[in-house]
Image (cartoon, rainbow, N blue to C red; front, side, top):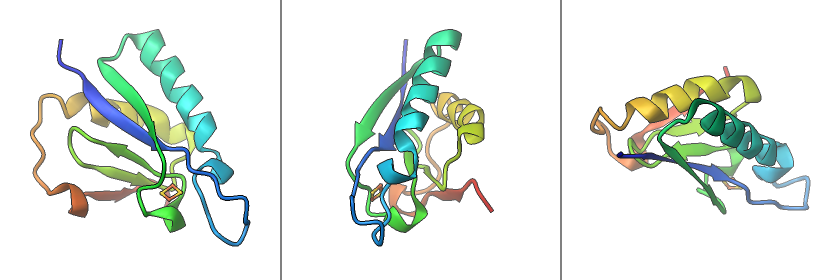
Length: 106
Ligand code: FES
């Protein structure tokens, strides 16, 4: 079975003047994603990563299958992101990875 790949930045900077995903809760996002993937047997591989270079939008996730970035991710965004990631298996990317951005928090 084909699987989609979802990445979560877990980079941590101890300096509070410089944002980083781990300092803004990305480890909780990893736990929530893993629990949902396991509970629903989703065809998604979750990987951790150290800095996409989008630090000002932390925490950041990216679906590698579609190239889609997700910025300012909150726990309540996880079901939507997992749904989009799962759908990406059947939908080829329509944008280049470097231009695929989505701010999930207004
Ligand atoms: S620290 Fe997460 S994108 Fe840079």
